[in-house]
Amino acid sequence: MTDRNEFLEWAPIHDNYYGTARKNIENTLQKRKDLVLELDVQGVESLRALKYQGVYIFILPPSMEELEKRLAGRGTESDNQVKQRLEVGKKEIAKSHLYDYAVTNVNVDESVDTILSIIRAEKNRMSRYQPDCPEIRKIIDSGTA
Image 1 (tube, rainbow, N blue to C red):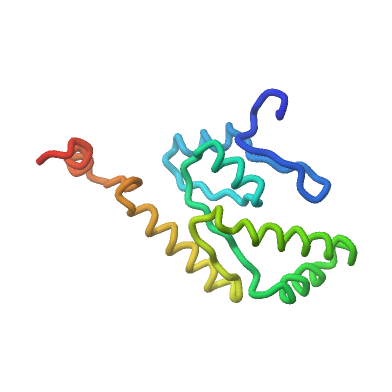
Image 2: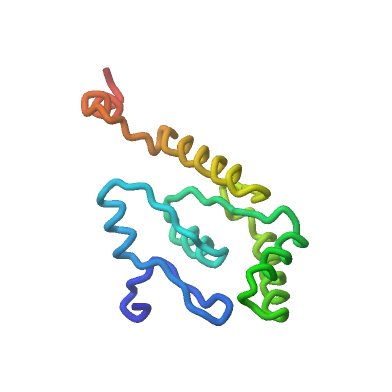
């Protein structure tokens, strides 16, 4: 798929390859559906370089200590892998300026509410707003009454 340019973005992360398939994005957008992508910093850098329209939200841990506790608590990685992920995490946090918003994930429910609030607000930004009424849409699009 990489050779055929079928990814919008892709990168090697923690010894694995991750990417966003163009076809999935296009299919969702054609249906006029909201699209949420889980991207790392490399993915955001790639999309920003492409001038890809989106709202970028950085989700932060409450502290590095809490991040370490959460990573270790999963029990899916060795101590060395957890340490490596913490170092990568510090580098990623240093690039949080690439994002439009930051949400500190202290409490999952509150973080979800914050993210949903951002999505609702951004859908009502005039540059993205899509009125349900065709008549209103036509007036807005024409710029005249």
